[in-house]
Image (cartoon, rainbow, N blue to C red):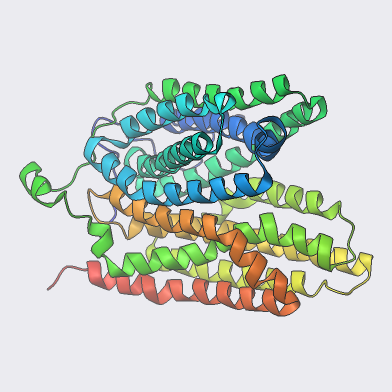
Length: 429
């Protein structure tokens, strides 16, 4: 499990990443990263439009009940978990660029069928298809970063692209407010189809990415003998890393589900703090995600970044949990402080996790490893809301303390697990 420092065959190498952006420009100087920025912007803008209106679209416009919608989306989430590993394997075999193009193009077509839905079976089939394609794209895109960006640049680049994603999704959410205000079938349909158009634009733009063949690795004959076996599934340290990262990503369910419920049901803080907290998180991620990638250039350092992030996430949980029963002003202060601390933990754990997912991956099998890694992330995203609701909110401040302890333990365990992975990868002498 060693780190390659070149791009995949046929993709030109960028200059040393002294800075991701050109002086006086908001866009990167590297043409590959610039193209990825534009595709990320378009994709996230469409997602921001869609996610803001989707729940109301399914219930108010298409007429499905809340229970039906919840069940369908849960099953679709399972399909998304199952899609990551085969998508990663396909990226290794056929090239991540082409897998992204095919899957995101299929997602454009599939999501355009949402306005035509009639009946729960059709809803279930289409939701499973779209979600599986979406998770497959996420895995292939992560593999693309490993293959198309120099090793010393890819984690910082992911941080930059994540900041772009947050900005674009926020803008999409604002624009979707016009749809919510209009509250007509036509407005909702146009918004949903705009997301489909964004997928199609991404597929077209990705055709301009140079290269795109399979990554280098073992000789063709050896690869043919081993390609039926997934090396990541036999890599116990990496599987352990995946589980630890999945535990750390429960922070997103905490932010999106746990904090809003906690503020509204269990504290005296104003309800407007829910929106304010999301805004604080978004702004801080945009400002600090790239900076958080500094110090992740070696696996041991990246693991210690995860450790610091896990401790900050735990501290945020404690502060949020202590807001129960306090006056509106005191509760608001603790909640905002907790969200700020949690966000700094978020950017650190994301940066450290990205670095480790690449650095501990086997040569020529970036897709296989990213598929496994993203499977853990997808599983946490699917199960997270229920775990946070039942395991944290229902137990009050004790639940928040327990969540904090879990996040701190997961971050701390990254250090010995990373050492284990490095020792396993070291050649015998």
